[in-house]
Image (cartoon, rainbow, N blue to C red; front, top):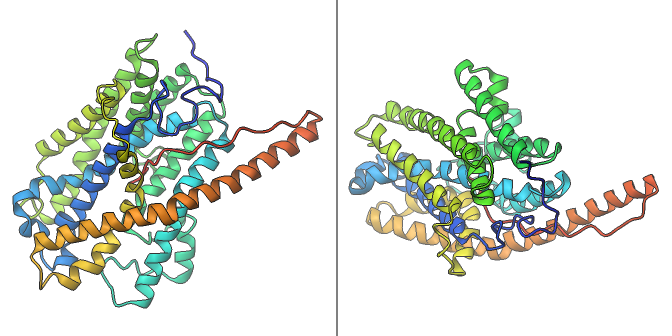
Length: 403
C-alpha cells in the first residue's frame, strides 16, 4: 500500500516539533537538553585537560564513568535530527525546507562565530583558540569551512558540517517526492552505502554517506516513520532499519570512544566498551519511547524553552569554559567552579536565544520566505499561470542538529 505525501496544510506538515497528531513533541525538547547537558558535562569534567591543567577525570573521579560517556550526546542529537528533519521536509518543497533550515541554524551560529573571533583576537583567553586567520573566520560564517579543509572556529562546529551534508541528502531525496515506500527504500540504500563506505574507506563514499553518523540519522528517520504510520502496512520494515542503525551505531560509538581511550588510557578515560553499549542502548530506547508515544505525558510548556536554548548552549559552552575555568581554577573548588560555569552557560544561552536566536530566526525566515515567494511568482508569470499566495514558511522546531 502506498502512502502519499500529505498536503501542506496537513497537521503534521509544518515540522514545528508537532507530531502527526498535531501535538508538539515536548519530549524531544527534553531530550535535546539532555544531549546538550551531556556534551557540556563531557567537555567540562572529562575532556578539557588544557583548562584544568590536569586530567578532569581525576578531579571528578566519582562521576567519571558518566561524564566520559557525555561524548555520545552528539549521537543523541543526530538521532533527534533524523526524526525531526524528516518531519520538517515531509509535505514541503526543497525551497521551503532550505528556508526553514537556514533561518533555524544561522542566526545563533553567526553570533557564536563573531563572539569567538572577538574573544581570541582582543583578549588574553587562549583555551580552545582555533588560531584562524580573519579570512578563515569569514569562511566559518558560511558553515562550509569543512568543505575547504579549514578549521572550525568552535570545537563543536564539526557536527554542524555533518548536519548540513545530511540536509543536502534529504533535500535531494525530497525532489522525487517523499512517500512511505520511497523513504524505506532510501533508508535501506543509505544504510548499505554507509556500510560500503565504512569497509572501503573510500574518501568520496565516506564524505557523501558519512558511515559513522549515518546510522543515527537513518534510525531517527525510521523512528519518525514508526511514530507517523504506526501499525500500517510495512510497519515492521522501519523496525528493521532501526535494528540495522542500532548495530551500526554500536560499531561507530565503540570506535569513536575507543580512539579516545587508546589515546589517553582507560585509567584517565574510564569508558569501557560495555558502558558505551549501555549508553547507546539507552539512547535508542528513549527514541523508541518517543516514537511509540510512551512519553506523551511530558507536557510542561516551559520545557519547550529549555529545548530551544540548547542550540546556543551547544555552540557557546566550550568558549565560556575557556574564559571561566582557567581564571578561577586555583581559587575555587573544581565542583563549585564547574557548577558556576554550567549555570553561567545556561543563563547566557537563554539570553542568546531570547535576544539573538529567536528574533534572528524570525527576521531571516521572513526575508528568505519573501524571496521564495517572489521566485515562485516569477516562474508562474513566465509560464502564464495565475499567481497565488504561497503559504508562510512555518517555524521550525529547535533541534540542534546539533551537535
